[in-house]
Image (tube, rainbow, N blue to C red; front, side):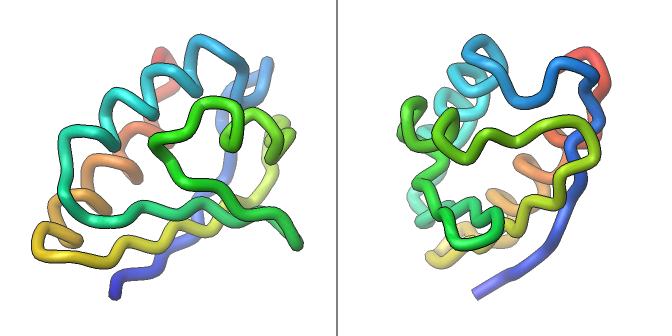
Amino acid sequence: MKKETVRIVWQEGLHMRRAARLAQLAAKYGSSIQLKMGSRAADARNILGVLILCATLNSPVAIETVGDDEQAAMEAVTTFFKERSA
């Protein structure tokens, strides 16, 4: 299991288009990818679950990956969250 926390860097927060891109990215990996914000949690492959997190600018989001390719999945997801143009 890998754990890391990132902050939302986008002025608009984690909106529909970005949630869809994240779900597409997460679907490429066999590992489970969970996002947690406060008491809320979401599977990164589930667009609606990601949107329900209501992640706004500077919100901390905890990422957990579990599985055979957890390291690669973590690197891809953290890179996604660091890209300002994602």
